[in-house]
Length: 351
View (tube, rainbow, N blue to C red):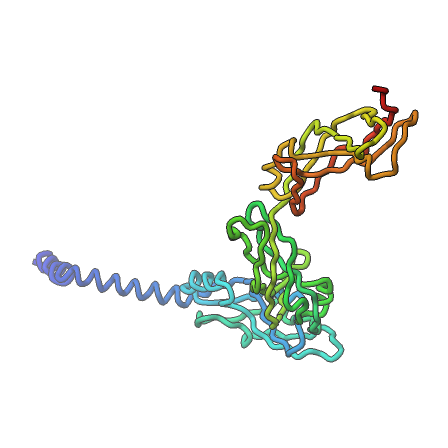
């Protein structure tokens, strides 16, 4: 009888509504665990950036590298969220305002919990700052007129920039006085894109009123420093075809004598030489050896008379067409391998 009664008691009070009782137990355990980890405190030391605000006309030396070590405590349940917050740029930082000292000595800033900025509340408690004070070095800002140095992208294939005129030629730049002092030779613009193909059959052309942006920072050494410029700059850019070079071998050297010349002019040694031609690609590619005339002009000097030693005369060059008519090609340079030729003047043989 007692055993039967005990069994009935177990069945009635333990297994009756078993599922509901298991769920209630699970919820109780969950609440206990949440309360446990919520009350558990995590301690960590983090390096947190320091943002410094100063009065107009001042900058912070090495301000971009200012950091402080902060020992924090927070509920364990916020650990992952808080560490993600720290890795996000500009979301957690120490924010302080500095009043410049008249003698420009480093300004001391005491760190406290009111200066810590986060995007949300993590129940943070600041245990300590290391260091507890920051020595912030300030430097005055200044403004200076500096030349504009235009910077362009690569030119279209086969072309080059002949010149660039910035308007205005100088701009007012403001920033740290030690950085501005290093810009006395000028400030480069951001890169202007001039890579678009030119109009057809153009040996030269102009790009006018091309916007040239002045950058908001300059790099000196391996560091970048902010600068400010309110001036608007435009550039006039002149482009021309790139000259190419081509060599011709064994070009004859002609001897030009005046009409009725009573003597005979002959080459003393070489009667040919190599020639290098530089100029616009289309014009240079169209040349043949027959288009190049090299000559010694006996008529251009005093009358040469026979003598034992040869005369050394300058070599002239000219481009002609297929009908031997002179052609003038702008920017064409013809350079013989030798600049002079030795010629022999002799008596004419009797007929």
